[in-house]
Image (cartoon, rainbow, N blue to C red; front, top):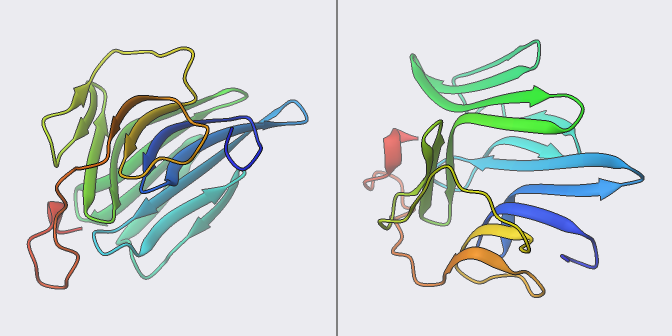
Length: 163
């Protein structure tokens, strides 16, 4: 439960879900929040509604059921495939929020600020996957770490992938 709703949140940073699924009237709704290294929104999907931030990414490509966000030539930031009606596959993705850096690819999920790696795993009985920082109430997580070191958020400081 999150705000009184039945949800599944695979990734949460500082109480904000970066990936969230919820069921409404038999329909699966996706919310996906993608930020750059300075917490500026790059891509937002709320309840299946897609929004772009044209000033933050270098290129967006929406072709068929695939969405690719690039931050520069040959620098894929997010590659998502929508397998209608009930599956979303993040083939490759960078999730940045409040100094936390999470990478997703076909081999698993890495919390880059730590040594945490998750590959070929499933979970049941929990409504959250990876939770970094403060967790929302009423969520049970597979992995929760409140004390993850953060990268600096100031302009010009060292940051992941020059995102």
